[in-house]
Image (cartoon, rainbow, N blue to C red):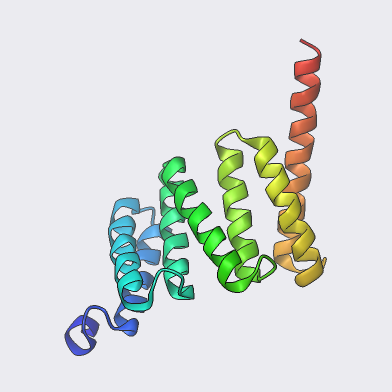
Amino acid sequence: MGKRVWGKEHPDTLVSIGRLASVYRDQGRWKEAEELEVQVMEMRKRVSGEEHPHTLSSMACLAATYWNQGRLKKAEELEVQVMEMRKRVSGEEHPNTLTSMSNLAFTWESQGRLNEALDLMRRCVEFQQQILGPDHPRTVSNRATLRGWEAASGRLHNETANM
């Protein structure tokens, strides 16, 4: 109905397509989610521009789908773009930028790039504590993740030293 009434590039149509992609993602239907997310991202770039918040959100959704498919390099490429554009547009301390930092840190950790992940997550948590507060759910979650990674890093360091 939305495509017929509003047109395929109307913002409400793109929201509807994005929601359907989200449902597919929640159901583990990665390929279907990816196809719709690529469509939404390309249309948003064309209609709103590359640095529009909705475009950046659609890119982040596609990156999450790539991550869930195990396509970590593609996820990383998009996450870096999103984080850099959000820094430029909204500032490094904006909550959306902090979410992008956290997402990229998780991807790096999944790629085995623990030192880079730790550095980025530390910066993210520092900003979250200042901006969102120490008790905000995202701050609490990322701080716990950081502690776990630091513990793993210490174990890895100790295992390597004992070889």
